[in-house]
Length: 267
Image (cartoon, rainbow, N blue to C red; front, side):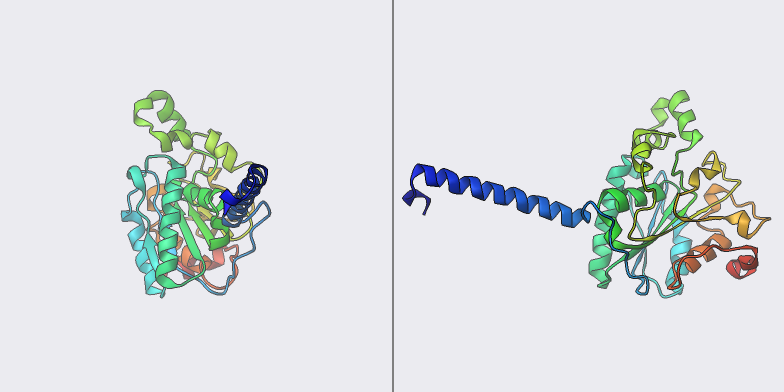
């Protein structure tokens, strides 16, 4: 017992215990975050549940159609409910995504998930994977029309109607603090495979190529179906885009698609 020790020995023992607790805390954080090095690539031959992340505003309606198609293919597909109506802090939204992932893995017994992020939902997915330990639990990430490098629309809202540009809106202004941090270094950290799908006529993500993601398989809808006029709001429900998602979330490695795939993907 401590009372049986001399004051000097008691102080020494307490100091050693405190140091041990600090070391344990550091190790726990490192394990949760996957350490400073890259995460081990997730096994690609065992697809788990698919979590679909809504865009700015948090509406889940546009993603229900895609979820239905995924379920028809035998996948467990869940649309994530975002806090604060999808307009609050994107980091907080990423935390909510993490809670949904934990529930999906516990409910299915799977070891990894696939993520489909629509619009700002793709940024949320990236925050969770890169900043909140999701790299070790994510097999694939597909983003649909996501403003990875911001959108001028947010800049316009922030300057002309600041009262109508809540936190998530401000975080989507090009080179915001959040985007600057997220895009510094590796935009597609190891662990999952990455795909970015976007439309060259996107009127919300401006410029549309803000949806490009270094290190990802980069797919424009028009590069597959040249006559497509799919707009931003139509991305989750467009048959070709849905076909792309189903194809890239299969067991085969993610791959660049071409005009020869247009008819197949749209059927």
